[in-house]
Length: 373
Image (tube, rainbow, N blue to C red):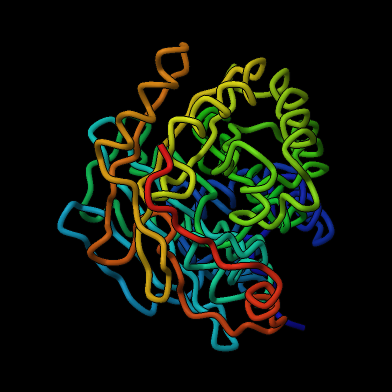
């Protein structure tokens, strides 16, 4: 019988698994603190756990994160790990340091089946969902690797924020993502607040409703277009869950959210979605949805015909939104020298389902206009 990877068990599951082995309830708290808070993977080092229990665990359990294939550091301090998840697949995890926070961008799938036009991951196709242990393993590995070189905050952590914005659509892997979120929030594990854990979705409407009930963390919605015609082309999932349904789901999420707004992510594509008319249409779309906008300069990748909007165009677009009271930020490009910037994560994916080739055949290429102002 193969060993159980304890990185994949949230508090309730770990307690039940240990109970099945005849262990007391408090054992789960002991073991969780050693694994997640201290980064220990050897059971014989868990010194406040009874010797007999340590021997039992060593015989049937393990603590194993994905193996590191490459560990890259950007000139701006961003750090990216390429992690082996087997069968020729590799995922990417990115740490972004700032003065007031340390943010880890975590992957949830090997590849992505949504196939957004502006995203390198989607153009590689889709292999499989990650297991909970592979999702949590990214946080476990990064937190304890970073402690060797990076100052901790007052809570003893380096990573203060986690965003599920890496490779994959998190809500398409809901059953593995949910226990991972619970571990991130667990005071005996990583102890992050719901405000500091963000799930980004392209608009999986029914699963947004489930998340609101099960574990309402901060929500970011990949919007990228103000109307269905354009969003159908940029974010193909819109064909199943169009903007009216998506905005309704956002309104339903807000009463449960740890923040009183939804974050809308909007990649700025030159001549595609960055005109003044697009900005005004966005204002009409979100008129009764408390929100902030995160404008993201497009980060190029091989084979894409798209270009980032010029800085002056991004500023003009932002000013239209801000003039109506919308909070707008423009994301700084970080880690682009190691292909760690938003939309650049590609890893190495065996496109088991043929998702990329089918999507490319089905969808028209985006035509870039000359001047859409």
